[in-house]
Image (cartoon, rainbow, N blue to C red; front, side, top):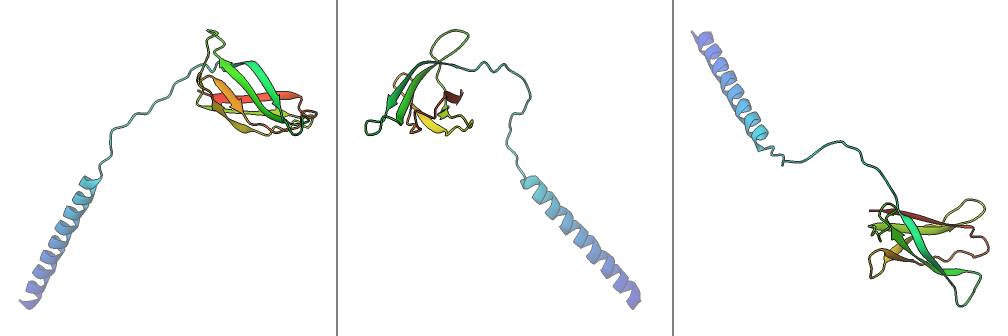
Length: 132
């Protein structure tokens, strides 16, 4: 009779353990709340910008260096001024090395001013990188 009582106690203890673990698992699963979100896939054309009205300014103390370059960005499809959120510019030399600098937007939101300090004699091209 004593063994029978021990087996009933073990079965009862096992049943209680299963119920406790099940309730805890349910509680943890119910606590995982994920907010609604969006996801998707698509495509769109990247038209780029036209860089117009480029103005270089030489360094006052050393005219062999630039001090800044200014330019406007234009939508190539409409021809209207176009603003960008990030704009970088730099001059390239014969090694094709470009030193990039961040450009600030002017009052119009589409005219940019970049403080570049590269040498005039080794600069053969202006590079502009921008995103909307």
